[in-house]
Length: 93
Image 1 (tube, rainbow, N blue to C red):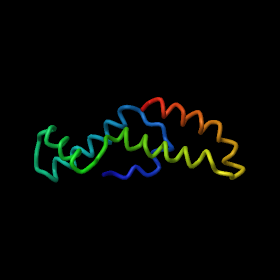
Image 2: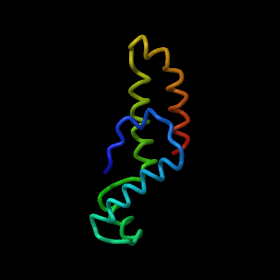
Image 3: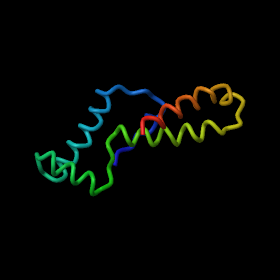
Image 4: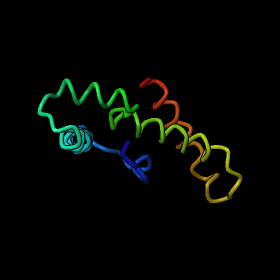
């Protein structure tokens, strides 16, 4: 499983997700010495590795949930934006 530290705060484009997924798939291809995408997909599922989009979306939801309940004065300024983004993330699932 890859570590998407900090990516939940960024808005990524589709090609960036594809690049991350490519790196993960290539790593699994080398580990299991295969060229078959089907084999890689099975191994990813066996190890519980989600697609980059899903992993980052889950981390973003957790981040926004924690952020929206903070009592810090600076964070309170951006709570409305965080809640709006949280609602839009929830509709994607």
